[in-house]
Amino acid sequence: MAKTFTQFVCAECGAVSPRWLGRCPSCGKFNTMAEETVKTEAAPKAVKTAQGGRAKPLSSVVFEKYSRISSGISEFDNVLGGGIVSGSLVLLGGDPGIGKSTLLTQIAAHISREHKVLYLSAEESCSQVKMRAERLGLESDSLFLLNETCIDGIESELDGVEYCVIDSIQAVYTDDLTSSAGSVGQVRECAAKLMRIAKSRNITFFIVGHVTKEGALAGPKVLEHIMDTVLYFEGEKQENFRILRAVKNRFGNVSEVGVFEMTDSGIRAVTDYSGVFLSESRGEEPGSCVTPAETGARCMNVEIQTLVAKSYGVPRRMPLGVDYNKLAMLIAVLEKRCGLNFSSSDVYVTAMGGMKLSEPSCDLAICAALASAYFSKPVDKFAAVFGEVGLTGEVRAVSYCEKRVAECVKMGFKKVLVPAKNMKSVAKYADKISIVPVLYVNTMIKALFKD
Image (cartoon, rainbow, N blue to C red):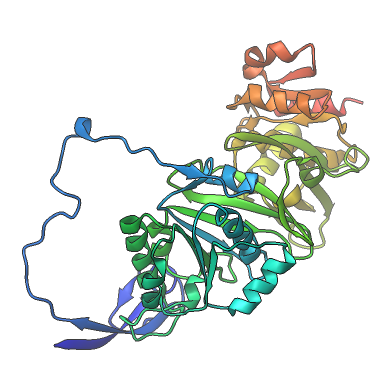
């Protein structure tokens, strides 16, 4: 006999409580407990066995090679780790209007030239999807459109389908639950059903997910745990450039970043990053410095800009693309080890192009940009800086030093400041670019602002 009961589920972490709570006891968030009705049916008791078969030693496990296909967009393939893996679940999140549906429509149309693709649109009608495809100049007889919101009704439509787009996971529901579409229970159960279909029938799913006002994927974290790959599509709506970054990837590197440009004819990959992460006026005004940042298998030169202004109250530290605690630590190092006083100044730091610089190798470039703004002296536009900064003011060695210097040579830079402990690995580039070894932050300041 079926039983129905009510429970409260946290929209952030998925924790379950029998009664409403103002604060989730698991993640500590306020006002995240949502009510949902659960219907259960009694099932006969049976002896359970492992679905994957009996346990076997590691040495006898046969390595499975994953087949990949191209999406038609090189930057998207790079973020995925070399292409789309068959039978995987790819979750694409982003703000409304950022271009998620446009990107997946282009990919679906390209794949449908050789494979059968189903585009399930739960938020738009089929005519709206066709209108977008015509605007992008896309046509394909193997791309099938379906306007459906019940996830249980699409299984019969998946016969012969190899790739499927779900737009979006918050707009579909399952009849197994009585709660409305987009609730925590519906999102979690629909994602679990798609996972079972993908693994049992070897169908690749591209799932669109909305984000909250804090920038996180709407729904519990268990939604990300189910997925094989989780991608975030970011950028300002007023700008043409978009950044695609992976926060989870079971088949590739999570450090990869893809750059795209929104045009009238759709989204295209950007392979020349000099116009995205470097400004044309660098070297003319103080407060900017270029650093070669490592992003997975590639290296990009990113410009860091800073502004030091007089404070009329409590000094503010406003980083964008840089960790707040990292900025506070570097300011303390400059004050204690180099004698620069920021105690009465507001400090603003940003990474160009919407990049997020989290690796330690960007520390020295941030210090150089801060010192440039402090002394009101610009850094040479053909100079690049990288290195990790310790609390003693020492510049520590970083990884991929040779790769970073090679990128600076490729981009036409004439001078690069590197940690002194990395000099041996980059000595072969001495005839192509001026390499300045740096042991302490003071050394960097003298090398850039000795005049």
